[in-house]
Image 1 (cartoon, rainbow, N blue to C red):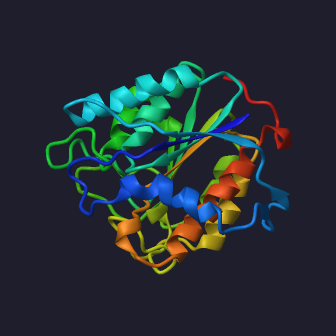
Image 2: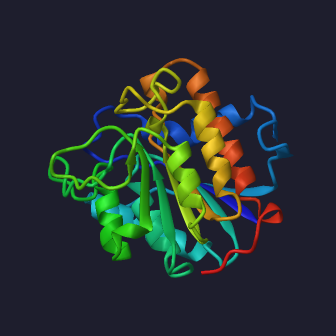
Length: 264
């Protein structure tokens, strides 16, 4: 079974507020598109939508850890999950909750940014620090594969492959064994195709390249998140529809009926 859950959390330092509205906007846009994908020649499989989980706590760390604890009772071995952010910091909570089930989890990180700052505006748990925290959590930075970045702070170690996604992921997929977690920041797309993000970066990949790249992960994924869509950054309909199309493709990719078994 595939499960969907919204995590409408955004940190206090976010440049442009609005990512907390993304889960509801993506669900709404899903109503406007076909269930059938001409890219994968399959329809969206049956999935259970658990609604949204809201964090509690005074600090960003407390709020993210509250999401982690609220997710743990929902997660079961052999199930598949899609998480809708919210800003990118939610990925810490989701990966931390999944690790007891999949201790060998690897992360494919598609993003315009490295997200490896030690802290951002004093917040060590921000969307700009989430991958640094995940490296610490996993204890091995080589288990996180960053592709498509084109922005970097001087303090950030340059890990992964900049600018492109399809070619490096094709090479990576040959040696990438499940279980794999996909974290997809919408700003990996070029802003001419997806402008509705808080921190757009020119020079991103195309929608078509991203779709082709995602299909390389079939049979490897146990969970995925889609983060950093900001409905307030663009009043146009098409970013919501683009996001919904990507959600559809990820749901199909996660369908256990069409891939090999995944073990921890």
